[in-house]
Image (cartoon, rainbow, N blue to C red; front, side, top):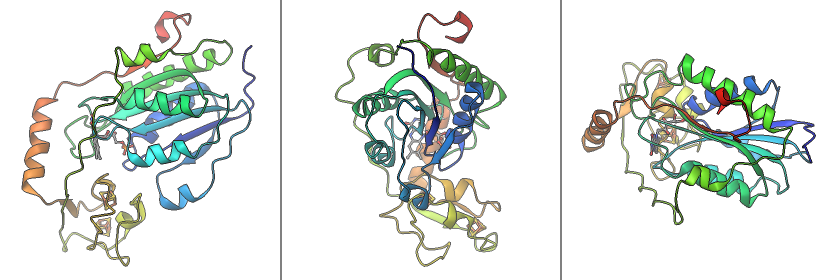
Length: 272
Ligand SMILES: Cc1cc2nc3c(=O)[nH]c(=O)nc-3n(C[C@H](O)[C@H](O)[C@H](O)COP(=O)(O)O)c2cc1C
Ligand code: SF4
Ligand code: SF4
C-alpha cells in the first residue's frame, strides 16, 4: 500500500554545517517544507522529537571515524518507533563514508523505519579547508536536490532499499571507530574578539564558564565547530602530531569523491 505522506520531518546533526546544507538541498528536491529537528546544540536535543504516524523522515548525519558520531546514535535511539518511510543520508569529508551509512540504515531499521532511499554526500572536512574544500558545492547541492526529487517518487510506491545495496558485503561487526585523539586548541588572543560564537556553536557545551579560552577536553567531541565557525580565525588545533596526521590525510585523499545515492531501481534512470 502506498504511504500517504501527511507530514515530513528533517532530523540532523551538523556542527560545521555541511550535513545541514546537504539535508536542506534534499528537502528542496522533495518539495517539502519539513518540520526541522536540528539536533546539533544541547538545547535542541532537550526537546523530544514527536513523529506523526506514517510521517516521512529524512535523517542526516556526518561521518566520524568511518561511523556515526555517538551523539547521532543517541538521537536515533530516542526517536519514536513506528513504520514510517525514511531516507538515510551521511556526509563525509572526502576521505570515505566507511560503515556510517549502513550503520545509519541499521539504526533506522531498529526504529522500524522503512528506508526508501539512502545517500552518502561530501562536505568540507572538519579538520581541513583543503579536503572537500567548499563542499557541498553547487554540483553537490544539485545532486542532493535531484536525489530529493527521486525520494519523492519512492513515497508513492512500496519499494525499499535492501541493506545489501548499501553494505556491498557483510559489514557486521562494523569497523571499530578510531578513538578520538586527545585534541588541544590554540587561541590567538589578539585575534579573538570574545564574540563567544564558538561557545554558542559547541554541540556539547564544552566551554567552561563562558570563557572562549577554556575547553573541557573530556567533553569535547572534536567536531571543529569552534574553529571553523570563528569569524576571526582566532582558533586552531594545537597538537603538531595531530596536524601532521591531517596533512597526511589531505595528501592521501586529494581526489574529489562523488556523491553515491541509492534509490529503488524502478525510478527513471537519471535519478539513480
Ligand atoms: C571526529 C571526526 C571524524 C571524522 N571522520 C571522517 C571520516 O572517517 N571520513 C571522512 O571522509 N570524513 C570524516 N570527518 C569529516 C566530516 O565527516 C565532514 O567534515 C562532515 O562534512 C562534517 O559534517 P558537518 O559539516 O555537518 O559538521 C570527520 C570529522 C570529525 C570531526
Ligand atoms: S568565535 Fe572566535 S572571536 Fe569569537 S570568541 Fe570564539 S575564538 Fe574568539
Ligand atoms: S570544543 Fe570541541 S566539541 Fe566544542 S565546538 Fe570545539 S571541537 Fe567541537
